[in-house]
Image (cartoon, rainbow over all chains, first blue to last red; front, side, top):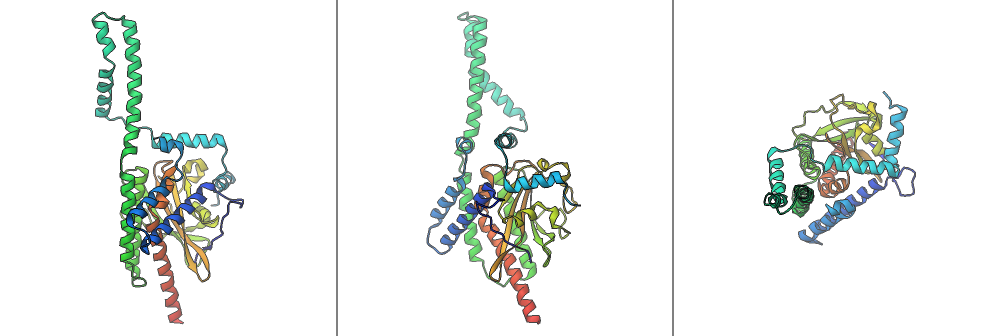
Length: 65
Length: 300
């Protein structure tokens, strides 16, 4: 069947900032997809938002190069 | 065989992302080394660079031939121009990548792919064989996207879907692999041996292993007894609805032969770009689970 999900919060002992960020990005990308599916945003708008999401946590080094 | 204490300690550090500044600097340097430094020298590339830079730095030597400046000064100035021009060429090469529109194209493709999945969504009508094919196709698409994001050659990336065996929480099976992948499937293994299981039971968040060798020598063994030639892994746990609660059904694993392949912004690109595909795999697993539930209810 699988294992029960134990939510991990920033206050929890075994918290990984990087993994938490990845989860948040994934959830936000899912929201963009659902809005596009419902016809609330155009394909161009969805594409723009996804591009912004991908660039959100770029480091100075990534931006520079 | 259980993990040694040393490996266990490193696994804990990995889960907690508990690394000091010196280790972060080491990781950053490794990320640059494995992802940015050229690994091969192309003959024509080298010849192009030498002729271009040689031409640019030849002016002081011409001046020396005509006796306008001394040989020492000509050599010094030519050397300085050579270094300066090489630096400019290096940055030129890096900025070309930034100027390319491949990132935007990728986002457009994934939006259209999402449209296609929605158009073909016919819930509950897939039989087991069709569903298996659909999952394998999704893993194949994931492989292509991952290859493009990590700038990896074909065959260096492998995508697998690992699920808990039946109602077990301690045994797992690699159920599917991307098309063309010849590594074994359906071998049941102890979940405790798998780093993906550790990710599943610790928050079920996406996790990245930058280099398997950093866990120690004993960690370089594949749980399925296949040859472990991969160095970096990206884990994405999959959750499904089970009554009122959510349970982790397994995880998608994307592994690469190159260390640090998912370092930096690459893991972010994967979770955003591949979201419709990962979601679709989750829906297919949910559908299979609901189908079996219906079958059990009908047979009672």
